[in-house]
Length: 571
Image (tube, rainbow, N blue to C red):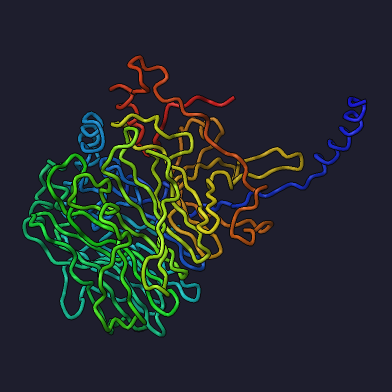
C-alpha cells in the first residue's frame, strides 16, 4: 500500500522538479580591475571603497609585498596605521617564513628600502587609470548618493603626506589644522554637512627619533618598522566649503602619552556619519599597553569615537573609548588580552563597526575579531558592544557598514578553525555580509551561484569561477566591492591554482532582493565552499604541523598572490 502511494506520487514530484523556475544568483559579478591593469605595481589589485551610488570604485596595488610579513590584509597597507605593523613578523610567524619574506625580491626588505628612498609603492587602480602615491591615493569614497566625493592623501617629498578631499567641483588640500601646518596627514571619510563637507582623518608632526629610525634604510625591519610613520598623529577634522576651502578644522584632545617612548603615538578618525541631529566620528586613539611577547609598555591603539555636534567644529572634540572597561582595551596590565583595537565605520543608526587584535594566543593563533557597538543619541554614549564571530582562534575583520545595518568584511575560510599551526602563513580568508539586526551572516561565495530549472547549481559567472576573499565596501542598496580571485576552470578554483587577482562589484540581481529584514532569502543561499582542507595530512611530524618544507612551500605560494593551500579535492 505504502509503495503504491509512493509510486503514484513520484511522477508528480518529477513534474514539479522539472517545471521549477530557474534562479539567478543573488549577486551578479562584474569585474572592475584585474591584475593585468596594475601598471608598475607587482601585487594586487585589492578593493578599497565604493561610492554611495555604486558608480565609482577605488582599489589599490603595491610594488612590494609587506602585508604577509606583517600578517595583515593587503588592503590594510597604509603607513599611517601603526597597529598593522608594529609587531613585525617574528612575533607572529616562524623565523623561516619571516626570513623568506625578507630575502625574496620585491618582498619586505625591498619595501623598507624603498620607503627610506621615498619611492612610490602604493597605486590607486580604476578600470582605466593607475595613479601613484605621489599623485594621490583615494582611501574612501563618500557614501552620499547625491554627489560623488572622495578623500585620501598625496605622498610628498621628505616622507611628508598631504590630506586631500575631492568635492563635486573642487579639490581641498588639508594639512593645516586649526591654523597649524602638519607634515603628515591623511583623510579617511567625508559626509555632507549642510552646504559644506565634513572630512575626518589624521594629522601630525615629526617625532625626531622615530622619523630617523623609520627612514634610515636599515634592513633590520623587525627593529625599525615600529618607528613608522615617524610622526605623532592625532584624529583630525575639517569643515570644507563647496569651493574646497576649509572654514574650520580641529585636532581631537590629546591621547594617552603617559609613558615616555621613542615610538610614535598615533590616532586617526576613520569614519563619520550623522546620527540623529549630531555627527559622530569613529576610529582609534592611543594608549599604553603590552605588545605580543613583550613585557615592556608600548604605544597601542584603542577604538574611539568623537561627538562633533552639528558639524561646525566650534568645540574641540573629546576622545571617548568604545569599550568602557580597561580589560576590554589595551592597557598596562599584562593580563589584558587585547593588543590593539580600531573602529572603521559608523552608520546613521549609530552602529559602529571595528576590530580588535589579541595578544593572547588561541589555538596557536593570535586572532583579530570584529566588533559592533551601538551609539545611542538619547544616552549620549555607547549602549552596547558585541563580538558576533566568537569562535575561538578564528579571525574576522569588519571593513564597512551601510545604513541598512549590513556589515561586510572577511573571516577565516569556513573550513579553517584551528588547523593551521602557529608559524604558518596567513589563513585563507572568505568575504561575508552580516546583518546586525538579525545576527545572520552569509559567505559571499554562497551568493554567486545560479540554479537551473532542475535545481542544479552553476557557480560560473562571466565564463569564470570566482573566490570572493575580501569585501571592503557596501552601499545602502547592498552593492558590494570586493577582492576576488578568478579561475578558468573548476579544478583551478578547487585547488586555488592559476588564479588572477580581480576587483569585483557584486550587484543584487534584478530578479531578486533582500527581504524585509535585509536578509538574503533562504533559497538564494547556494553552498559554494572550497573542498575540505587537509592540513599536514602527509606530514610525519604529527599534530597537523607542516614542518619546514610545508612552510616554505606555502610562503612561496603566498608570494605570488595565490595563498595556495594543500587541499583534498572534492569528488
